[in-house]
Length: 430
Image (tube, rainbow, N blue to C red; front, side):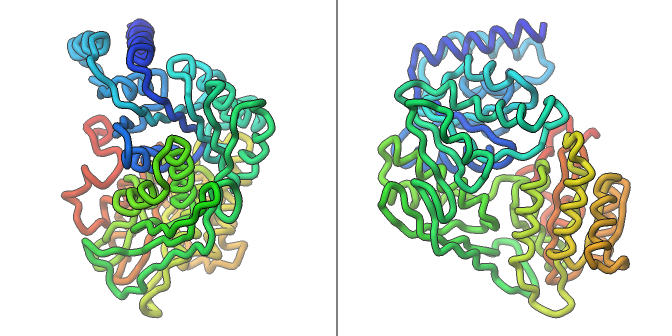
């Protein structure tokens, strides 16, 4: 039954694409897909009608649902029947579809590209997440890179010049136009980058906690860009990708930049600063975890200047999953980074215990490192020790459920369904 529904969904998506001919913007990478997708959608909306899914619909079921503008009915067979009927009788479709193409295993990109061939492909960054599903790191890189192979002949490919692995893909795509974007380099680039954080003794709901500022140039035209509450370079690279794609499709750079400044905000669970209890600030990065993303988050934590001597930078990190043979080395590398970025380290899970060992080896005092079996234990401990002026970075792989830590210490828990990840019935039951 599952395969039948998957086949019918895919066929309905293809039928609608042939009927309405929207432009398809496809995004893949190990990290940054969702932030980049949302940024591109915002920039294109400055001129066009755009559809992008609210959730991460990026697999064999999700991509067709995103194309059709539908939500998954879960296990409700009757609702699936009604959805499929609607899918085959659509009357309209937006001019642009901005979609994620997930690649959890070999062949995923090809399958998704055969449903929706991209007019434009964007490749964000490659990290060893899901490496356990591939025979080697090179096989994972090849899977991500293959998205560009499916771009239409008159299309374009946009590559992150700041990711060394992605940069090396530039020469593989033949006659298809390739554009590079990045901080300080690329066809679209940012210079004079600064993230201004407000030194605070207490963080309160409704405040602006940080502003990312940069001068961005696309094809020789330069404009100032400001992004509210965006805490890392990854937000800026997402904006650069968005500006590149928007200009490619004829959106004036000034219009696209204005739209990003007004509307682009951190995605739930992706370096999202939210007020915590007792006047603390929580950097919620709990959607998932890859080594590069953890490092970027720790760098964001380091940018905050404590308002008083007793205020602390606290890293609460859960295990990073699916790293295969790199599990130990990547966790130890994170631990060494924690020692430089944080005053207190709460390590959750056995693999992050290796990071705790490495943090101590790198000079972090043992009495500033705590170890926990799960996120519930860590949340309860943090609730007891958190204080006014603390800045807390929380991250871990999806399986670690680190959003439970954030929920324990957020100032407005009634807003959890709107602010945190994994707040629907299925997840709340586990």
